[in-house]
Image (cartoon, rainbow over the protein chains, first blue to last red):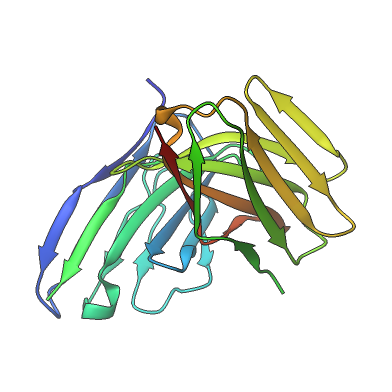
Amino acid sequence: EAQVTQNPRYLITVTGKKLTVTCSQNMNHEYMSWYRQDPGLGLRQIYYSMNVEVTDKGDVPEGYKVSRKEKRNFPLILESPSPNQTSLYFCASSSRQGAYTFGSGTRLTVV
Amino acid sequence: GEDVEQSLFLSVREGDSSVINCTYTDSSSTYLYWYKQEPGAGLQLLTYIFSNMDMKQDQRLTVLLNKKDKHLSLRIADTQTGDSAIYFCAESISNFGNEKLTFGTGTRLTIIP
């Protein structure tokens, strides 16, 4: 089944403790993106990747890192999480403009 | 700049038509999308329209695009309880290869039995 898989689905962590949210797609898509969803703000792009080893900042990149060592994987790294990064995170992939397939989301709480 | 606006809530009686509206500001957008988000789930692509089209119909869904007014709407005919969800309008702007979607805040559709 064609899908984007994120892990974990839920995560509660403490301020400053490094964490990684994994994302994997099995559709051989070139484009991958991370979004965060916050009430009243819709979804905002954090980082995107056009292909392997090509990544760039989206609208809200501060406090996040990504890597794209393989085509299928696009992990999101929070080196020192803070409470304002409490949010619902979505990974998405696409083979063409905009028709993204989204993962099921990761709900992160930073206390 | 990019900005996509939607009303936050819509309530519709079961069996009636739902019309969800969206306005966008960036005239360079190439595709406009409607995504559906059910509780606890990711976003599911419902339909999309290329910016040089006026209308697209897909079963119960009709998308209308008024490019002059930068207005997009999604009509759901014969609304059912399974249509309860948050609906996001999104515009796609290709910016040096960034296939970026700019989303609206989402419209929560509630079906009244």
